[in-house]
Image 1 (tube, one colour):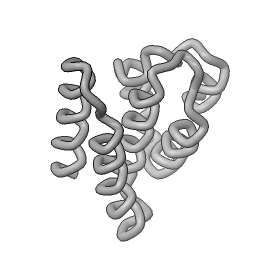
Image 2: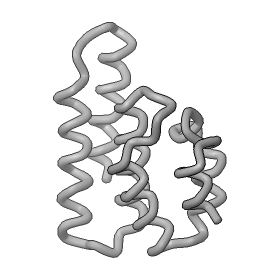
Image 3: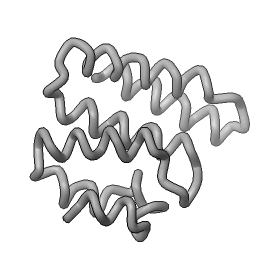
Amino acid sequence: MGAAKVARRRAELHEVEGKGAEADWNEALQHLDRITSNNPRSARAFYNKACYRQIRRKSATPDPDALRDLETALELQPELGPRAAGDPDFAGIKDTPEFKSLLR
């Protein structure tokens, strides 16, 4: 999980610097994919995948894969719902029907 977070921070730094960050985002998601493949009950890894996918999208339109990962995280650990509701990673989509339906 730590390696994914480092790759995320590197991606965000590269974006601020105006450099390409796609490889860093891919690396972060690959780390999380390995975790969820080895432990399909890791709600935290699915939650982080949802965050990273949505941040990477840079849009007020929900990323379908992010929503799927968030749904899985919430199924595994429902108490993540309030965290997701206030998480700045989802700020751009918090008012969309798709996002709101996951938090019910």
